[in-house]
Picture 1: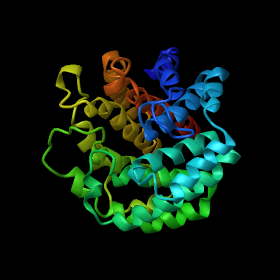
Picture 2: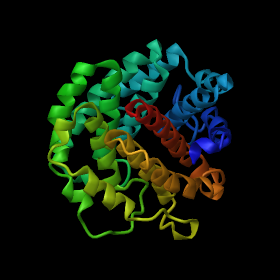
Picture 3: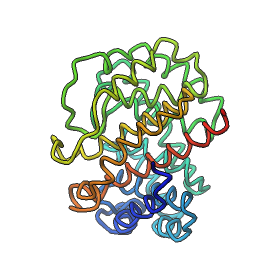
Picture 4: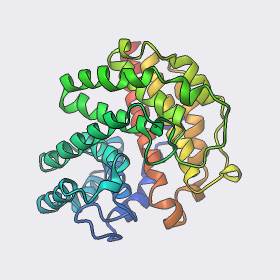
Amino acid sequence: MVDDVANVPRTLSATIAECVVRNDTAHPVFHGCIDWHSAVHGNYSLRVISRLTGDRKLVDIAQSVISTDGLRSELSSVNAGQLGQELPYGFAWLLILDREAGLADMAPLAVAVSSQLRQWIIGHIDGDELKATEYQNLSFAVFALHRWYLRFAPEEAATFRRVAVSALAKRWREPCLQEIQPITGFFDPCANLLLALSDSYAADPTVVDHADLTSMLDAVTVVPPLVPGDLPSIHAAGLNFSRSWAIYVAAMALGRKQLLEVADQYFFATYNAPEQWREDYHSYSHWVAQFGVHALDLRDQAQERLLRLL
């Protein structure tokens, strides 16, 4: 179990702290971890680990790369369309970071990003992006924006569920009821859709009436955790972690505590293979550990909600 291993968050933090402060790109704030989006979720991850462990030094590292002027420059780049390659994936992570950080100076950037991300989602709500296994995945964008709305604009969250989430719920069979194919990306489309729908279900069950969350969960968990020798690609190193996200949130939404142990199996399949997240900076260590931290964050939230349901 994750909570039986106190050193798990701290162990993951080392490689993240190293990459966040690097100058791998010319971006004013998010310049480490090889690319903009990895620097964003690296910053988020340090803050989560700090919250889970009480280690304030990790927040200080995350904060060390952030400045008011730097965030203004990032905003200018977003408004000028210079970060178009980060839409939707990087923008989704920026909202996840903003939800965690809650920084006043980051608010204008997050608002601009949320607006562009919403436009992208609405423009692709009927598209094949629902089945994307990497950066263009629609469900991950919906999940991130909905969570951001829940924190900062609850009324908008309700509207977004009616407009976007209910539309996705009607399409649940497309990524989940199909012949199982090897996935070479870091996202399982069925798992990501389960993630988005379960998150909205926890807020309002009626918006996912058209989806069968139990059948979706079965479709995700019928695929066993990947073992190191079975990785079909470098990006597949993130699959166990991202599948665990969906199962943790489904556990929270459905009130099924036993699902935490199921999700833990996916989490530890990668955590116990450090060559997939701690080594090889270009291939793995600049991003995979952050996926693991997001799993720990969602697990912590699931545990808290399940305790309240008892």
